[in-house]
Length: 219
Image (cartoon, rainbow, N blue to C red; front, side, top):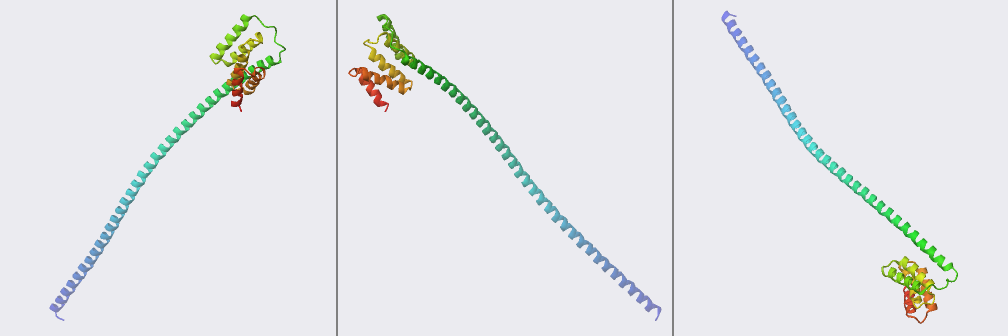
C-alpha cells in the first residue's frame, strides 16, 4: 500500500474517532441534562409538597387557636356559673337560717301563750270582782290591743276583764274576742274552746251568732 493510501486511511480513522468521541460526549451531556431536569422536577415537587404541608400546618394552627379561644370562653362561663351557684346557695342558706330563727321565736311565743292559758284554765274560781273602774280599764285596754291587732295583749286584757267582772255586760264580747284573737294567732283549738263557751253560756246573744259562724268556717 502506498504512502498516500496510508495517509488517507489514517485521516479517515482520525475523523471517525473524532465523530465517535463527539457523539459519546453528546450522549453524556444529554444524560446529564436529563438527570438535571429530573432532579429539578423532583425539587419542584418537593417544594410544592413543602408548601402544601406549610398551608396545612397554618390551617391546623388556626383551628387550634379557635379551639383554645373556645376553651377559654367555656372555662370563663363555667367559672361564672359556679360563682352564681355559690352566691345562690349562700343566699338560700342565709334566708333559711333567718326563717329557722323566726320560727323558733314564734314557737317560743306560742309556748309561752299556751302556758299562760293553761295557768288561767287551771286556776280556781276567780276572786271577788274588783272595783268597777278596774274592770272598765281592763276592757278598754283589751279593746285598744284588739284594735291594733296585738292579739296576745288583747287575750291577756280581755281575760283580766273577765276576772274583774264575771257578770259584766261585756263578758260575752270579751269571751268571743279572746277566741277571735286565738284564731288570728292560728291557734284554732284554743279559739274553738272560747267560741263554744260563748254558745254554751250566751246562746241567745249576738256574740253567739258570730261564734257559730266562726266555728262553721273552721270545719
